[in-house]
Image 1 (cartoon, helix red, strand yellow):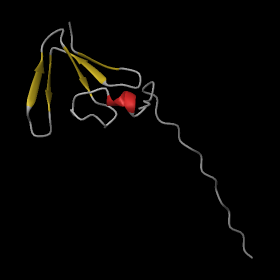
Image 2 (cartoon, helix red, strand yellow; image 1 turned 90 degrees about the vertical axis):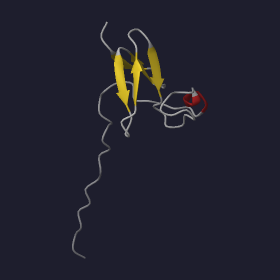
Image 3 (cartoon, rainbow, N blue to C red; image 1 turned 30 degrees about the horizontal axis):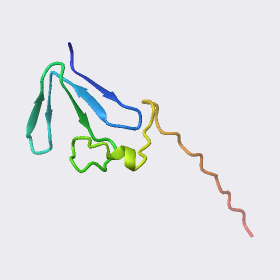
Image 4 (cartoon, rainbow, N blue to C red; image 1 turned 120 degrees about the vertical axis):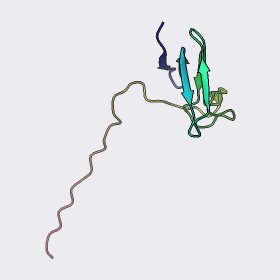
Length: 82
């Protein structure tokens, strides 16, 4: 079974092994085949990088898909001589 990463709605990334995850210092964790870890996406976990379900308490709302964030149209202001 290949490794996978999926997003829970308004929750963490669910990573299923086999996969190796490295932090910025090069420390690695190995997720065995069929095992999972949940990684924080809300930024509020007290156990980062792991999820501790704080997203529920802070009402984290995630993007539901890979579609880009909508761009708000700005108004063009035309200055006219006085």
